[in-house]
Image (cartoon, rainbow, N blue to C red; front, side, top):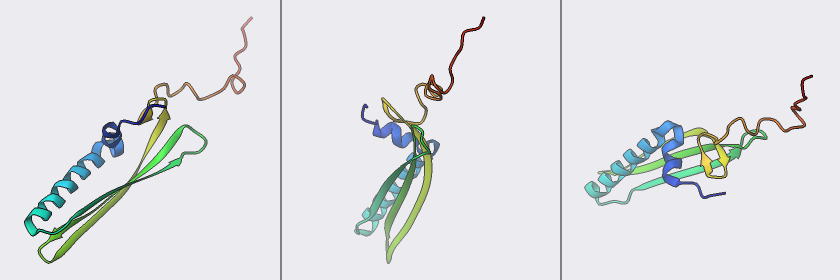
Length: 114
C-alpha cells in the first residue's frame, strides 16, 4: 500500500470543513501567542476503527486548541467522523472501484444461459 497523502487526507475530512477549522485554529492561536507573549497549543487527534467487515475505516478527527488571552486562555474543541476506504493508494474518500469487492464468485455465481 502506498502512503496516504496527508494534505489530501486532511482536505477530505468532513468534506473540507476540518481543513478550514484547522487553518482558523492555527491562525487564531498564533495571533494570541504574538499579542500576549504566551504559549498556545493546537492538538489534532485521529482515531481509526474498521466499519463492519469492509475495507472502510471510520476516522474520528478531533481538533483541540488553546488560544492565549490577556488574563488566561480560551479553549475550544470539536470532534467529528468521516468514513474512508483503505485502498492500494492509501486512505481515500472514495474507492477506486467501489463495486469491485462487493461479492466473491462463490457468493454470486454467474451461470451460463441456455
